[in-house]
Length: 120
Image (cartoon, rainbow, N blue to C red):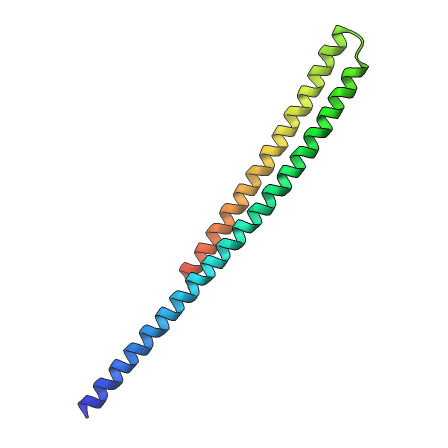
């Protein structure tokens, strides 16, 4: 009779261990898939940002050329350079703010992805 109870205990331990391994594999797979999703989202974001930056830089350059064509004096050139410099600084500030927000979003998504695994 003790052999039967010993066999049952071994079978229960094996079942519990198999269940824990299966759960660990499931969590590892979810972490891998979530990581891939974050990486793909970042690649998409980077390509959109590059396109947006190129479009904005082209617009700023066209504005600079049109203002340069309309300048007729040294004082006008000075004013134009100040205005275009201010536009460029505003663009850089907006770009940095956007990148900071994206970095914050990326960190939050990564923490949530890892945090969900630890809670389970």
